[in-house]
Amino acid sequence: MDNKLLISLTEKYKAPLYVYDAEKIVSQYKRFENAFNQVKSLKINYATKALSNISILKLLKSLGSNIDCVSIQEIHLGLKAGFNPKQISFTPSGVSLEEIESAVALGVKINIDNLEILKQFGTKHPKVPVCIRINPHIMAGGNKKISVGHTKSKFGISKYFIAQVKEIEKETGMLINGVHMHTGSGILDVNVFLQGAEILFKIAKEFENLDFIDFGGGFKVAYKENDPATNIEEFGKIMSKRFNEFSKDYGKELSIVFEPGKFLVSESGNFLAKVNVVKKSNETVFAGIDSGFNHLIRPMYYGSYHHIVNISNALAKENKYTVVGYICENDTFAEDRMISTIRQGDILCFKNAGAYAFTMASNYNSRFRPAEVMLYQGKDYLIRERETMEDILNKQIEVNIDL
Ligand code: LLP
Image (cartoon, rainbow, N blue to C red; front, side, top):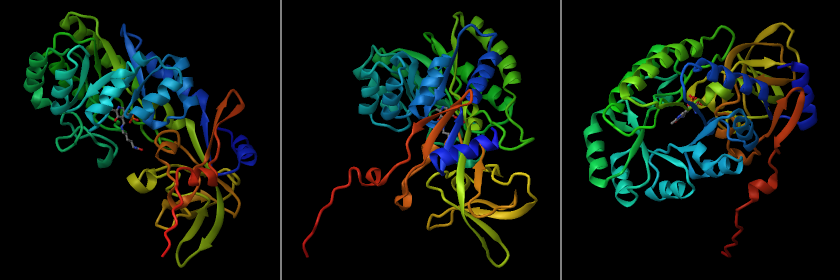
């Protein structure tokens, strides 16, 4: 995205600021759709948790996307964005039976990830079709924190418990209409997805009344120049062929479902923050910015790399900086990173700030969460205002204890 334009947005809306390039979301969506143009029924259930601003959801809706939600609150956001309940799937982990029932009452499709709730749900609601989330016991993902399909992961029903699922299905008379898995996030290798798919195909054969198979999300995007990304075109080609074969063998035209989050929105996002101070210490030069892990936690929580560009001085000579936040804890965005000369007041742009960036922001240190802007065809749309002191105080109740 053009640096001048981004700077002008920080003048208009102030920093720190999230800016999303809607055209990038559109092109990524179309790429995904295209990669699977050989299957009859593709359903893209965008992983809402990656970026849940209602205007982004509306954009995805107008592209023809469905959504996947992990909380009843995300479902309400989806409904507010105009999705039909049938376009929403609910894939929670470890939620109460009541929360699943509230989703069903709204008409949303559900995914259950443990035998205990499956049995309770099936007994009470034998007429509601259910998809089951399988744990394929595959260790994959950008790092351990975002690997969720391995043996020790809390997610899904173990692939070794299929007999028990069938037993519950029979006992309760419920209908299992889909099988699902999601192995992790930031998975590069196409073969990992294909290997997982074979596990799911094998399980799918055990159920006679499926309408779809859901292979989750987890595709890796590039975080800097020359950083490898999942080859979605290659995956689409191989997977579509294999899926069509499976469908034929199964004897029914099934839908193929995916739940991409990062793939659709990561690269669309730019996080802009102003430099408060350039501070020399013994060996290190710190660039202290008007932000912290309260706004972008991925570098601190996962050790994730976010490319940083000094868009106020992009062509200047590069020096080594440690970019830190203002939170009263260690909140290092980048250590000893080569960045073009940073001066007080410059605007730094953090790339790949579309997925799991704003949605993981908090009010720690009683700071305001930033504003969000969506750009489409050169026009900027404010899609969330910066918080104010009122938001910090909202819901707090002042109690005076007389001592
Ligand atoms: N489906 C399910 C059931 C999921 O749990 C997730 C992500 C996705 C789909 C989408 O995965 P994606 O395509 O975005 O990789 N906060 C972490 C990522 C956590 C992902 C959680 N689940 C990060 O910032 O790297």
